[in-house]
Image (cartoon, rainbow over all chains, first blue to last red; front, side, top):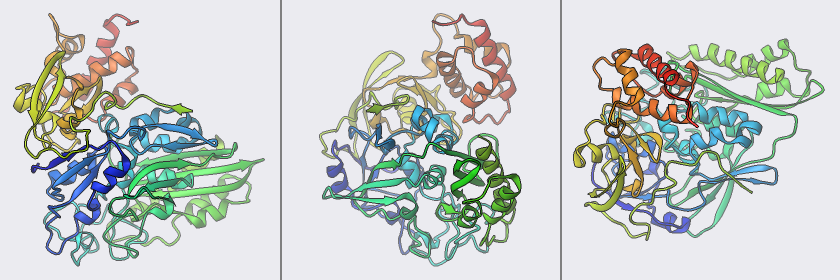
Length: 340
Length: 182
């Protein structure tokens, strides 16, 4: 790796003030040269070090967030949970309240990456990791997302790319925790350099390429995700996260799905169905949700809903296989949630 | 109410510059407790723990293969927890307790090492130090794991010789033969 400076502030505001830009913005350039004056925030550092080792980022300084006290806690607030961004994926997956009441999130965190990486990687960093698109991660390809004028995936190797909402760029969002968080209507607390805080739903935090092709979320320079809020789920809520990978061990999924159902007397009162690795942002399958809401849960209805989850899909030349996988995943997840 | 799951392996580490002043890009003094011995050394902010162990402390048992956290050959224990040392900066684990393959054996081989030999769980051997670190940590936290638990704990390790079945047999054997720990 190239030589860089190191800073490890103890306060959120001093860290926010020290950051000059975001990881996404530091990767955007006219000719494919990353910003070599950037001062970038680092939590677990897993994706950041990967990008630096590949020469896709060349920051002058890293600002460590791991010495800031309090960001590694999970607290119960008003029946819900307030999760600090430095909580590791291992901690999240092992946490009793998360496992009991937010099962889909525990499953998504506990099956991400490998045990060794889950011990290091943080939830905040997981949400902010950059897409795995091999053109984005190739120095030889100056793609649209890095400031070029071509998305190489459309005419290239697009078997791992998006089947929804790929206008201008066909990445899929890599975070499976994000898939689960959207199903729980989770919110983020974001703190800026002046100490000002804003709240945003996880669903609105992520951006589609048509809104901004250069970044995956609304985080601005000097902003830090300081908490992930999970509202209290109703007593009757049941959730799970399922994913299908090319290999049995660790990998980003070909397809993943989180479902959350509120069921009373066999009737589905509310359904959240979110697809991951399907679109440039977590994709809410609203037609499938509508098919279930207010209806008596049964196998035929669940089959109809699983088909509806693919409504609007527009697969690329090499990823039509994902349609079958998603329909199967959603059907299985709904059947399991309905039976639990 | 504050609730915590298992704590982060970083919990006992503090970087040497928590005053908020920038340091580097040149070397910065840190200390590490490596295999029970306190070591003071200068590290550049860009040096990974794996590089520092190998190049500065000459502990070359820890291997670097992918250097991206994708193969786990570089697994060491950070405050007891197995991590990929290629994805940890040495500067951020100042003060931490690090265990490497060089510290596993005592007067005799560790039961896991002995079981690897007995079960022929090594072919080229490049992934072996990392695998052993994960297996030793597993048997400390779960003295009598099921085969599924062994597979889950070793899920991050790549062995291109394909020794996996022998490794799993070795760990299960080491668990059977070792005394039940309190």
